[in-house]
Image (cartoon, rainbow, N blue to C red; front, side, top):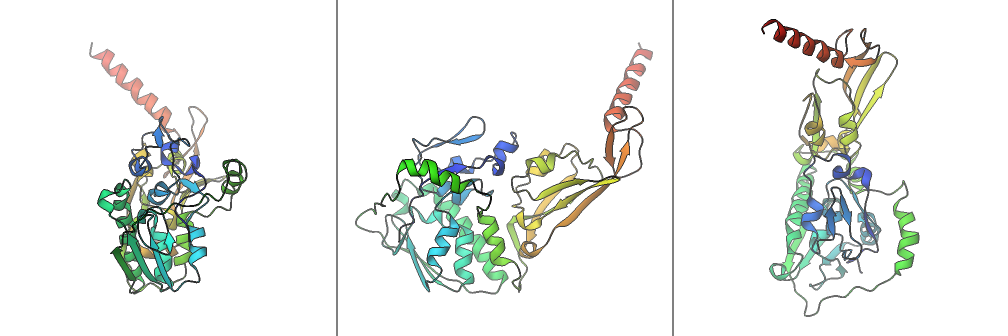
Length: 336
């Protein structure tokens, strides 16, 4: 079974935090790319002439911004009927071939664990491999899946062994470049594309949690009364976990915990410093939409523009700043 290469890989701008928030320092995709096919200018782009379509960037990206046809859903579909999953890199002996074991996400590993499959992960001589930098992400993904397994009191049957092959496995090209650039692009850009996080949520929702453990890649967000509903947090969130709703008399911020990956980009972007984010527990995957903040709608007596605040006010923050600046200027003139 060949899962080593994808036919097409691209970056979904709406899900990439570097596209939505220029001050973000996220460079995971660039760090893991073995051929340096991902360049920042300033947002990341994939050079199709250099990309080898290994899928490691897909596995490493926390935001599901990397899209490809050979995604987690396809791998899980093909392994659904197996009781023993014998998987390995192209330099190892195995039944299922992937480019590198770093291609195994926490979504894939968690699914196999929940299905009580016996998992055998075969690797080659990693320290001599050009893809060895990706191993840190495999360890991260494995650690995350083990946290989830412990939360549900499951005992994973995972064996990781060095099992190098004498020959490197060469994947077959099953689709032409022309087909890739036409059919697959249309397929990948459909709204029904399931991301890694969406698949993971489907796996966990409704399951009884035995030990509610902290999970590093899910967040708990709190918003203080400093918030003025400017909308920056909603704009920069790459997971669409935050939503601002403005009504006739008030506005509110809604939060979907299961989508949050604890990246803290909303907190970094908040002009007012009103947002704090901390690691949440596995039970947050089961939480529905939460109302984080509600503010009153007011109309400024100076500029006649609408603004939102926690209390009844008649002057908007912009006009307040203007008044304060004017007072400071007057005081300065008095002291000359």
